[in-house]
Amino acid sequence: MAYYYINGIHFEVSKKKITKMTGYLTDGNHNNFFPPQDFSRKQVIDMSKAGDIFFIEDGCYRKLKIKIYEIENEEFLRIDCHPAPFDYFG
Image 1 (cartoon, rainbow, N blue to C red):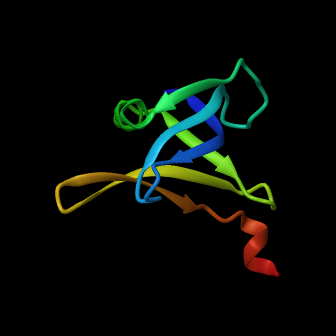
Image 2 (image 1 turned 120 degrees about the vertical axis):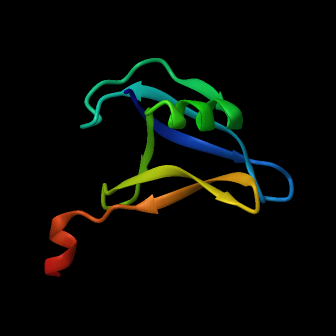
């Protein structure tokens, strides 16, 4: 399992699908920074199915995980928010 921090998401013209993502290999705590690379939509889907984790961070440094969802027999990439514990206490 590997962690990839994504710092660029590129959409097709219709804005319906992601065409590629730009990011780099890191660790779960985002301590390591390796050279950036481009990932095609298919690569992200295949690597996610193999157990690799793709994420971005919002302005509060919460990890937003990129997941695969199947809708009408088509796979889509979606970003889900995993709130930090302090978010529940105001």
